[in-house]
Length: 64
Image 1 (cartoon, one colour):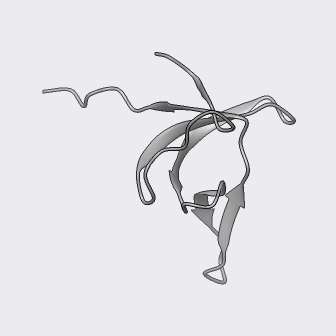
Image 2 (image 1 turned 90 degrees about the vertical axis):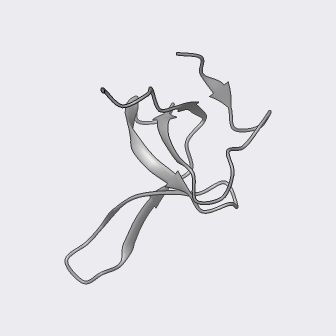
Image 3 (image 1 turned 30 degrees about the vertical axis):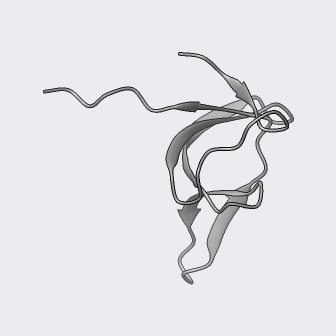
């Protein structure tokens, strides 16, 4: 898997990717909102939980 810096290249809006947050040392699956933010969850009130990761990578192919 190749990590890409968000500052160098951004994924397409709506694309599911793996993100890495340098400030919290966390990685998880999220989708691009197209403005540098990525949504990875929704709270109990339906409000999007987002982050601004430092890096991202494409998801691996699903098993067959």
